[in-house]
Length: 281
Figure 1 (cartoon, rainbow, N blue to C red):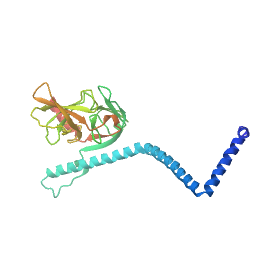
Figure 2 (figure 1 turned 180 degrees about the horizontal axis):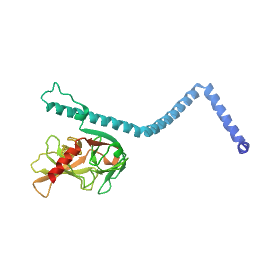
Figure 3 (figure 1 turned 90 degrees about the vertical axis):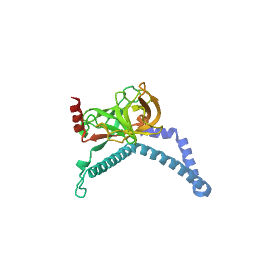
Figure 4 (figure 1 turned 45 degrees about the vertical axis):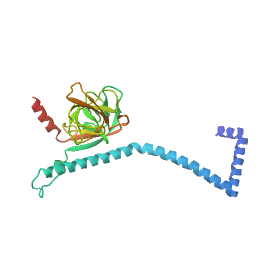
C-alpha cells in the first residue's frame, strides 16, 4: 500500500493530466455529434478486431475436437457404406431374398476406427507412423490405416494405448493395388525419394492406362477392402523386363499434414491369413 501511495505522489501531475484529457474527450464526445460518431466508429473497429482475434484463437483451440468429431462421422459413414455393400452381396448370393434377414454381424466385414497421429516421419528412407490407439481399443497388427482421402499404411506393433504403422513411404511396404475399372494390378512400392509419389510396379506391357487414371486397393490382402483410393497416375516407364511397365502414382494422402486417420478392422482377417498359411506350408 505504501508503494502505491509513493507511486501516486511521484506521478500525481501525470495522473491529473490523464484525468483531464479523459474528461475533455468525454465532454467532446458527449456534446458533439460528429466526434461521437467518429468515436463509435473507431470503438467498433477496435472491438471488432479484438473479437476476430479472440474468435480465431478459440477456433484454433477447438480445431482438434472438431477434426476428431469429423473423422468419427467419416468412420461411421464408411462403416455404413460397407454394411450396405455387404448386405447387397448377401442378397445377390441368396435365392430366397424375400425371407432373408441381414444382421450387422453378418454384413459388417470391415470396421473403421478413428485414431490420431502422434508421430509421423516423411524425411527418412524407412518411415513409420505412431497412433494413439492400442490393444485396449481393439487394435491388432496387420490392420490397414487410411486417411479420409487415401491409404496410409499397415499396423505393425501394438501396445495397450499406442500402435506403430509402417508407412506407405517405406520401401518395405508393398501392397497390391490396381487400375480402377481396368483391374490390372501390381505392387505399390516407394522408391525412397519424394513423399508425394510412389510406383505401381509390374503392370503387364499390354495393360492400357493413361495419365490421370485412378489407382485403388485391389482387395487381394486382408489389410484393405477393395476400391479404397490410393492416387492418380502422373507418368509411366518401362521396367528392365520389357514385359512389364511401372506407373508413377501421386498419392491422394498428404503425409506432410497427416493428423487424423482410420484403422481398418477386417473381421475375416484371421480366416484369410490361415488359408494363406496353409497353402504356403
